[in-house]
Amino acid sequence: MSQAAPYRKSGFFNNKLMNPLLTALGLVPALTVKGRSSGRRYTMPVLPLDYEGKRYLVAPRGNTHWARNLRAVGKCELRAGGRRVHFAATEIPVAQRGPLVAAYVQKYGRKYGGFVAKEFAALPDPADHPVFLIEPEPAQQ
Image (tube, rainbow, N blue to C red; front, side):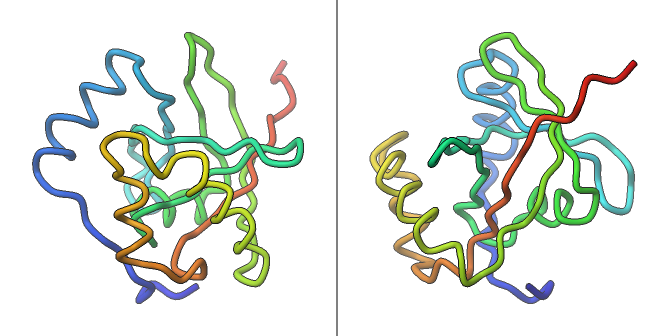
């Protein structure tokens, strides 16, 4: 997927107020990924998808900065329920995204005032939504 892939930027309210609040309070799972250029760590709320025994991250807003960062660095941390787990991430090819995107919308479409359903209505093509398989990294010694 090229850098020109669709991306729906979130507004000030989400970026500066809601997302930091949700992650700080631990109300939703939080993804932390290093910036592809800066190396700075960025944290944002995500909704992981468990599908057929594997865990995925789907980008509802399209080719977001977190998706571009994860594509570039291939590693992330997911914090949920007081646990932090380090993952290796592999992007799913466009041709294989359809069932994963459909499962994601089915599971999360109505959450948070229909946020997910609205994003997928605005960008309906599954090819526009990066999807990553995340697998726990072996414990570091």
